[in-house]
Image (cartoon, rainbow, N blue to C red; front, top):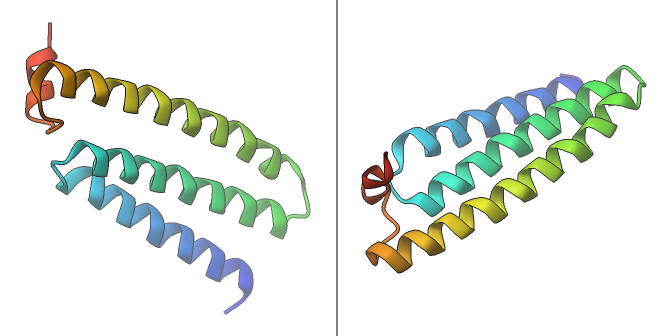
Amino acid sequence: MTNDLLVQCLAAFLFTVGMMVVLLRRDTIMVLMGIELLLNAANLSLVGFSNSSQMIEGQMQVFFVITIAAAESAIGLSILVNLYRNFGSIKTEIANTLKG
């Protein structure tokens, strides 16, 4: 196996684990961690493809994905703090009551 294939297999494994965490867990912090794992798997895949094709565009796109991940973390954690203040828990079932 070449290194490029190993990097893509690792990215696929991380993406699968992140997807399972998002779909199966009920704790909101774990769901946010799963989303971060999904984004990091996409970053790894982009860097792997840009490295194998000797082009820098994939590595430049990773910076934009990292920025989006940081913004998602900040907004997600602020929503969790608000949920805890209003309901006393951060379970995803409680967030169901926020539907308008």
